[in-house]
Amino acid sequence: MFPRTIHALRALYARRAISPSEALAEFLAVIERKEPTVKAWTQLHIEEAKAHASRLDQMMSRVAELPPLFGVPYGAKDIFHAAGWPTEAGSRVIAGEVSSEDATVVRLLRAQQAILLGKTTTTEFANWGGPPATTNAWNPAHTPGGSSSGSAAAVGCGMVPFALGTQTAGSLSRPAAFNGVTVLKPTYGRISKHGVIPAALSLDHVGAFTRDIADTVLFYNAVAGHDPLDPATIPEPPTPLVLRATGPLTIGVPDTAYFRDAEADVLAQFEASLKTFADAGCRVVEVPTPKGFEESVRAHAVVMQAEVAYYHRRYFPERAELYNPYLREFIREGLTITAERYIDAQETRRRYRKAFAAAFADVDVLATPAAPSTAPRGLAQTGSPAFNLPFSNLGVPTLALPNGFASNGLPTGLQLVAPLGEEQRLIDAGYLYQSLTDWHLRVPE
Image 1: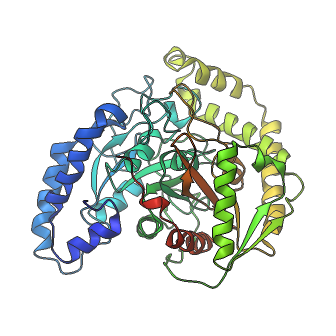
Image 2 (image 1 turned 90 degrees about the vertical axis):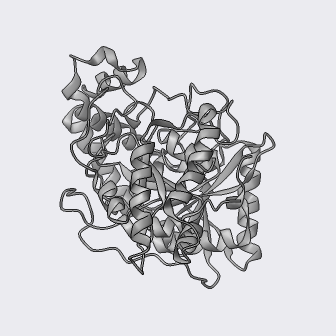
């Protein structure tokens, strides 16, 4: 089988065992076979990608040390600007609008000589309502999740080794669980949002779906860092992530019933994941949930609705009727949120972010299911972000990993959570887990 990971493709390139054009042809063959059913892409720029690959074929003969993401095809959620291409965010509101510049992440990936194949589908403006026609990588009768629908499905069924997405509530972690792939939601501000159409600016995170932890590390190290064009990025340079074997970890399980409100199969796979850690010598302990958890979750709702409305006020009322009905009303209601209510919600977030740090006093990471269910049947709903939203709200880094299958044949996911700035803890725990399991190696036929 042709390799589906960045690191395996990188090894082939290092040996000059395959050319970028040959690799691209393999992935295009998967797209040709699966895209009519999965519908992961809103636009494909195949001739442009082929021309890029051809230039890289020549570069291979001249350059001894290739960049880590050299010649790797990828997709970008259609809220990432790419110069000269339409960026439509799954909406009639900005249909046909062409980007004049690259998002910072796209620019950094171009510098790595990664091959941008096209734009992947999203719910309308990466928000509530307006789901695309994209289907789940494992079963077309089910949703791939959202809002990063196409990116998760494309990686899940092997169309590309990685694809860009964003998360405001649960739009990275949930689709990763539904499609059986891996995703790191970094600390808020660790990866630039410049050139990405916002959902809610103080809640948005950029990440990428990959097949495994090794690829997650390669992507993160290529794009993480301060960006003067995004004032929300962290000024201090990030420490590069590494794959390493560590001593036994301490895994904390929040004691709140909030994360137990899940399907039986999801909980069974979660317990099996905890046993995997325990059998490897890790301590698994229950952790008290700091007081104020539910109030913090409610604050997220206020902040998100107010910030969504703030961005979209530019289109109201002139283009209001072009939105899907749910998002239109969500924006209208958001425009009525007072400054006092918004600031109160932001203050609640700030207080709880400080209080929540206590949850990590005696543990390396926290663990929960990545979603309360497997992918729901049908495409009208994209599933619940309830298990991801609290951590998007806090801005702490999370990692979603495939951890098995439910009795309906659909993937389930494990979510790991670390303190602010501690992505390496997630990589350590995820690397250990994926060294002990093979769920990340499973791919749909």
